[in-house]
Image 1 (cartoon, rainbow, N blue to C red):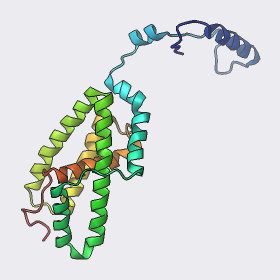
Image 2 (cartoon, one colour):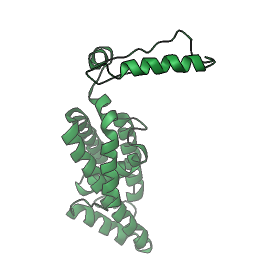
Image 3 (cartoon, rainbow, N blue to C red):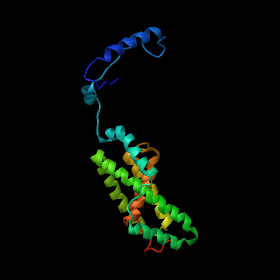
Image 4 (cartoon, rainbow, N blue to C red):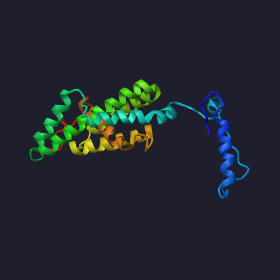
Length: 208
């Protein structure tokens, strides 16, 4: 066990309790000679590596709560001209799917807002993790430009970018790092790529 208290007042009662419980126990799973080993802050810092990723894992509960609150509140990214224009173009291409496309527009805009909240929280709590996120964004933008230069239609292009961003978030935060929010913030980054231009389908005529 690890104690962050500067005094040993809690250690005596714990040892007394352990001895009491061992006497009352059949000790099927505990050696009768077992003793408590107590680490203080110095022991913990010298025995365990504490880096930015470890701190992020410790602090992620508060971070995830803030992202969840942003999703629940419907926090939206600032309106981006290209974002709106691209979905207007998609509606024009798929007049029979306008309702579904408008739902996608709303989803990616609100997801973008959640991704911005994550961005702000990382910038405030973990400079290194924020830098890694920025690098992932740079690489995603390059991939988006390359894929936009192909003959992929709008729907397929968006789906490809969604899959890629989920993989990037798994690499950055681990598969369980952001839990069920992973795909939401990944979609937010796709929304940003649509709004900031790297994801482009209008000039190709794809899907018409």
